[in-house]
Length: 328
Image (cartoon, rainbow, N blue to C red; front, side, top):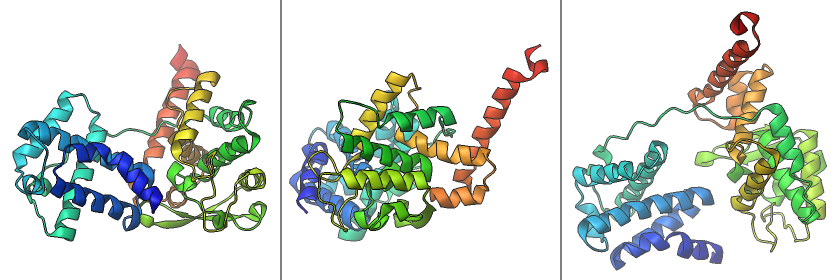
C-alpha cells in the first residue's frame, strides 16, 4: 500500500497542482481505482495521470485558476474541443492525443459511476482520427544481437545481466509486453523454471492467456533466479531492481537505449519492437495468423493483421532490391 501511495504522490503531483481541494480527493480515488480494480499496469497509470494533468493544466489556464468538481461538471463541448486544438498547436502526436482523450473520458466515467457526477459533453466529443501505423520490427539478426548483447556489459552485476537477458527473451521469445513480463510473480515460473513449458500471462483488460516457453527462455529465467541476491517469495515480483523492489520498465528501456547506440541499431529498437519482431518473424516462418493473435493476446484479429502488411511491405522492398528486372 505504501508503494501505491508513494507512486500516487509522484505521478499525480501535476494533476493536483491544477486542482482545487474538492477535486484532489476524486483524483486520488481514481488513481487507487486504476491500480486495484482496473489493475492497470504502472506505465498505463503514469501515462493516464500525465494526460489528465495536461487537461487540467489547460483548463486552469483557460479559466484563470485551479479546477474544481463543479468546473468539470459544467464543461461544454467547446471546452473539450479547445483542449484538443491546443494539443494540435503544441505539436502533440495524434496517436497520443487519442490516448489522452481516452484517459480524460475514463476519468469522467469514473466520476459518474463512483460519485454521480455526470458531464454528457465529453462522451459526445468525436475521437480524433488515429493515424494507422505499421509495427516496426527488427530483423532476426538485429533482434538476436540485441538480446545476446544484453548479458555482456562488464560493469553491470552478473545477476542484473541475467535478469535483463531473461526479460528480453520473454519479449522476443514469448511475445510478452514489457508490463506483462515485469508483472510476473515468482510462482508463475514454477519451483524449477527450467521445467517451465507454458506461462500464464495476464494481459490488457485482465485477459488471461497461455504462452509456450522455449527452452532457452526457461534456462535464462532459471539462471536469473539462481543468481538473484534478493529473496523471491512465491507471491512476490519475479524481477527485482538493485535494491530488491519490483523492477519497473525504465532500467530495461535505458539498457536497450545504450545498446542500440553501441550496436548501431535504429531508434525503433525498443522493448515493444521485440514483441513486434516476435510476431513478424513467426508470420514469416508460416505461423497461422489466429495462433499469433492468441499468443499476443490481441482482442481483435484486425490488430494482428497489421503484421501481414509489414510482411507485404518487406516483400516489395526485397523485390525492388534483388529482382533483376527491378534493378534494370
